[in-house]
Length: 107
Image (cartoon, rainbow, N blue to C red; front, side, top):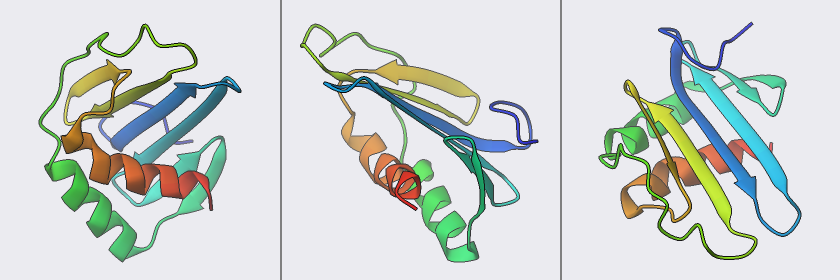
């Protein structure tokens, strides 16, 4: 089973909150296997390449409470490259990676 952290994990992403109180979690292993809300999925080589490229653009690695005092906000957590950060406001440098990870939740 793919763990949520460890040397075999490329990235773990979680989005929680909103009006409906959702919880989405995506963990992608270096091998291309993803665990998406508990469902195992194999990613294509081009999906992995695109995700790695998007993750290379992530430079915001610290948590922040900015934007957390808004009702029904979303909380985003990204663990990648030895860092884990939680944000209520999505940093611009996370957008490409988050868009790819959220697209996986719609598969």
